[in-house]
Length: 113
Image (cartoon, rainbow, N blue to C red; front, top):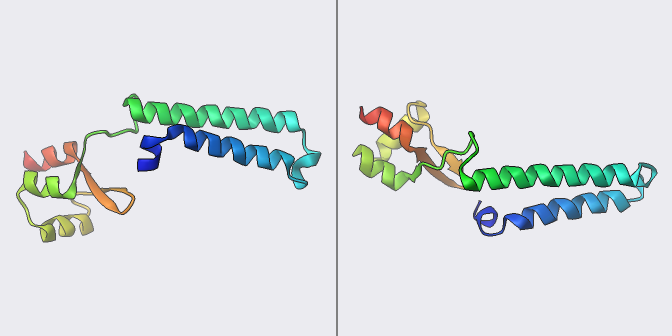
């Protein structure tokens, strides 16, 4: 995820390279290269939109109000064992980013009330 934040254009270039490679591969040479190129450009535009929306906060799927497990412990005033038990019981479901757990502030507020 940090690579996306630092260099979102790297992902776009990767997809472009991938589709350019597919276009020139011997198996796909029988297909129309112009159609594949247009398809690749549409996919790249779609990926670009998703990345821009995610980082601008306009995406409805983007929940920018995440806190780390340590912050959740402090806000809820519970132990690590309790947080883990809530995770297992699906009482408070974390959002996984890489290997770390983050919690939605809306979920934490719901539990505090």
